Amino acid sequence: MPKWLLPLVKISLVLGILLPIALPIYGTFTPWPVATEALSSEAQQTPYLVGVSYQSRATSNGSYERRAQTYALIPRSLKTFETVSVVRENEVVRVERQELGLVAPVLMFVVSCLGLDGLGYWSSRKKAARAK
Image 1 (cartoon, rainbow, N blue to C red):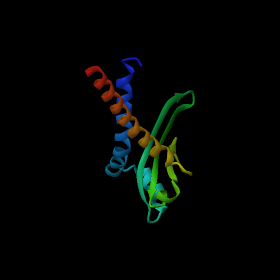
Image 2: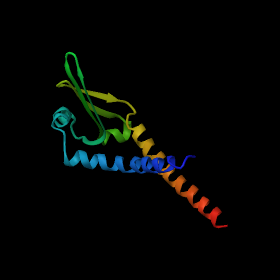
Image 3: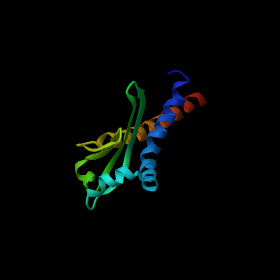
Image 4: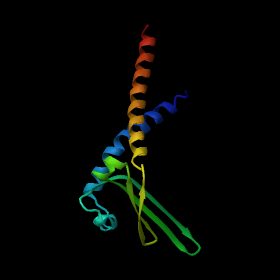
């Protein structure tokens, strides 16, 4: 493995652990008014931010802007793994539902935890081999 690749892998694994924890906190303290309004019809469901997306570009007809935030609606998402995305595309707002949308973020978190643990194990074995 190239020497420059290992630090990048370590950083990406740490981010894979920290981002799933930080996104719901960020979503709680800085709610998006568009999403708050769009999800107001979800009775007795608490939205937790699990993903964000932003895209912008200039075209010959003007500009294109797309912003999306994906939420897990607790407690429903714990049973169905469904996520809800609120998408604003050129001032048009729509709500999209993804069945099993919560599986990918959970798997990424688990893989990051296992990968970081595996890297720690691998580097400790490498250090032990050097010490011999």
